[in-house]
Image (cartoon, rainbow, N blue to C red; front, side, top):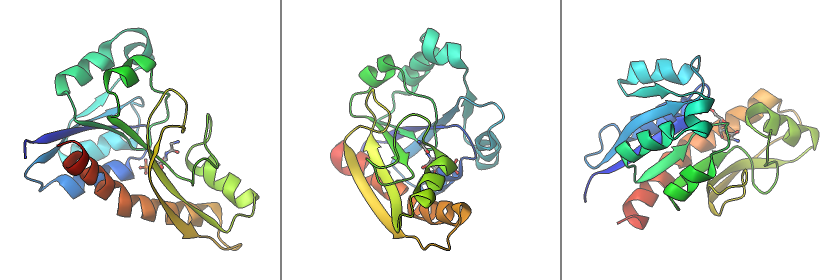
Length: 193
Ligand code: GAR
């Protein structure tokens, strides 16, 4: 198989980024080319240093106002763009430039708990406040609306009334670590031949 390359986007801690990088680090034909972040203080950049992978910071101007990020993506020419805890809305020009090649992970069972402002612990807090007995993850294609692209994969976990927000987050992260790299691999191997 021709080598496939993947670009990751992240805004914060980047534990999913680290998990994905580690999953593919010995792969003969799938390469993580770079990690792009909108947050210069993000812990994900420290992880990139430690993992010896390119970590690139960009600001709003580079993302929304000119074509800087888009041009960087054109150079990498990724087979797949993966949003792994990335919190800015993607501009339409980038979505159009990479049709069906951008995926996101959301820490809940969409269509529940999606949309603008629903990220990270806010999602888990809402799940807890509603007294839900299950939550999970949704991996989906990215379109121009937050969390509304076609669903690729969902996985569930049960939660008990005793679980606090941190415990719910931990259960959801465990699902993310288990499924996200596998789904990425399946997409680039099977569906992008
Ligand atoms: C993950 O749980 C991911 O699902 C979520 O941010 C977290 C990032 O964690 N994404 C969203 O909420 C997007 N709406 P990480 O930085 O440790 O990988």
